[in-house]
Image (cartoon, helix red, strand yellow):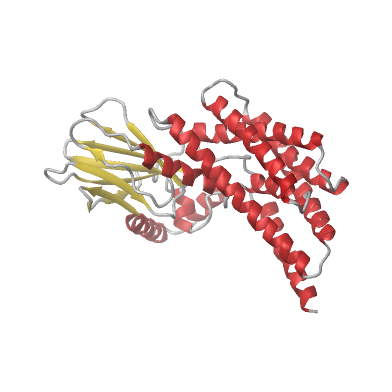
Length: 378
């Protein structure tokens, strides 16, 4: 009886995961959600523009919610209620964002410069606009400044601009990280190789866990084929080599494909691996070759997402290797968790074949759904 209950709980847990994947927005295969931050220091003052979905942030809902419905909900409030919502949003941002000069937080005012203005025809509907502006004074004799956003915000794509310099200095911050110090006088100092490697490693890992749902399903499909470690390592090694090659080639502009082609094919690769699990119980050479081809596709997906964020100047190779290392660590973690669940299932007395078939059918269904959606609405 205890084993039956344990098996049932595992089935329910797996079902809840699949259900959450099915109801999740059918986003691109490997996309990054990020917050654009544009900081300017000039004439003894600073402004930091945070570009994000302010309506969703004010109402406490995910940014994937319908922007038209959110704007209509806020517009339907009375003016006092809207003003109170704006006040609470400003307080929220003041608690979650920091501008530090020489490690000391600087006071600032929060405003919404686009609030109440007509929305451009090509922009999504919004009540508060898409820009929250932090404005303050630079302390006397300050030497450097940093920016920090709490983990409430996704990846931050930050650019610093000073009146004393031409081109802005850009940086990508993982959630909860503080920026590299931006000097107020003299030349900007680039982040060290170690800092760049650490941030892009974390970026690669979090792009798999918990955000890379389709990559997770593909790796799970590989883990389900055989209980033996050797076939699994053969597939994973092949997949790793393949997506490393195309990630590097695409990053340096040698090979590129549009996401509308790559992303449906990635979803199709999930379907193929899951369906083959239903048809065979042993690893064949043809499967290893196809896994290599699918790895090439996944590498193009990674590269397409990273191109939106940009690469650190002069440290592209370091960032590329660190990101790929983070991806592999995330992948290994997924495989370890999958093997642990399979082992627990079999120790509970449930048939392994039943788990493999049930999970493969669910993975194939989700992959097919994604493939159709990405073709119909890329």
